[in-house]
Length: 143
Ligand SMILES: O=C(CO)COP(=O)(O)O
Image (tube, rainbow, N blue to C red):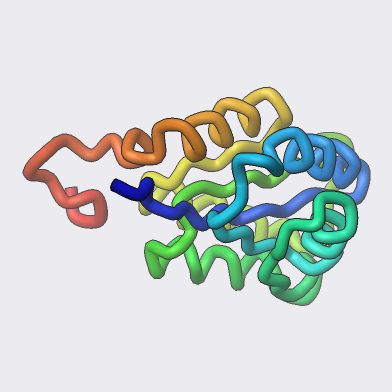
């Protein structure tokens, strides 16, 4: 039986974009058939350096985080990797907070640093069924 395909959301602040490209590159051979949705510059860099197709949304300051949050709320994105620069505050911080909140509201894994991102990617690619830890008989969206 074919494994379920996963849709991942990807965002990286400028100082973390190199880390994001390296991370996705190291898993690129396992990504075929899965879907990647990213904010614009992050996605363009991933496409350029890995050759993987990426669905590009707006840049963060233009609403990209909110668009990805919409995919989380629609249960399309199953995990988010958002490599954040802990030293820089962004003008669109409320959008970042909104994305994090909607991930929590829907119990969607959200990785904000490289170490956790590797854990989430590993889980998403090797044990996708474990991304949803909702106990049997409970509804993830209405616990
Ligand atoms: O701004 C961002 C994160 O806050 C991400 O947008 P880009 O991927 O277009 O740089």
